[in-house]
Length: 254
Ligand SMILES: Nc1nc2c(ncn2[C@@H]2O[C@H](COP(=O)(O)OP(=O)(O)OP(=O)(O)O)[C@@H](O)[C@H]2O)c(=O)[nH]1
Image (cartoon, rainbow, N blue to C red; front, side, top):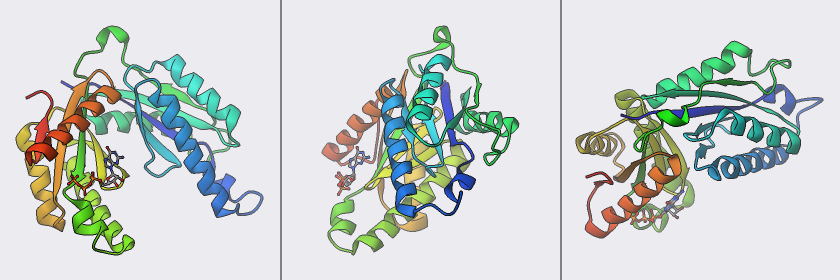
């Protein structure tokens, strides 16, 4: 059984800040957002977690093994380095979407994302060390088959992007609806999904669904471990097995 610890990272009062005292230069906002993501990726990644940029003003992290004090340090570090602050909601659940749902509620209950007085909230529950298990986090790494040969080397970069995004959109919706999983585009032709316990047949169904719906061919490697980093690394190795053997689904535990 999985126990995914999810942290919602939300920039405080960011909407109003982007237009105060007047609209700020877009390039500066893009620079701030990407640097903040990069810093969070290191701050969380150095502690074996994963952060996904999602909408940049809201980011989702898998933080098994990162306790409340470590979250507070990450929050303080951002506050010291940036002209904005972040609020953090943390929750644990077998179903990744349920964990994110509760993490979101902690912030929503503390006030609106655009409430000036709601700042640097740190609320929620972390998984106690004694309750952590070796298979708490399941990560699936999806990749488009031969994206280079079929798209990158054939089409212009924008039409390639549309194909990849369509595959991503269909996959993220399917995985959320069918399995309460959270799937995130991570660049290139890659999607990383934070999953509950799924079977080989479940993964085959997801791949079949995306192929039927939008004609994008995927393969997937999956891993399970104590932390996002370890599960994700297993998933990458399994994806290499897919490449070597020409298979579509490889699970580290079978
Ligand atoms: N974030 C991330 N991106 C990756 C990873 N591996 C590949 N990519 C991206 O995916 C793009 C395509 O690379 P591949 O997936 O290896 O190439 P492919 O043409 O799809 O070939 P096959 O995957 O072997 O079918 C690269 O340009 C990278 O942007 C990964 O592990 N993580």
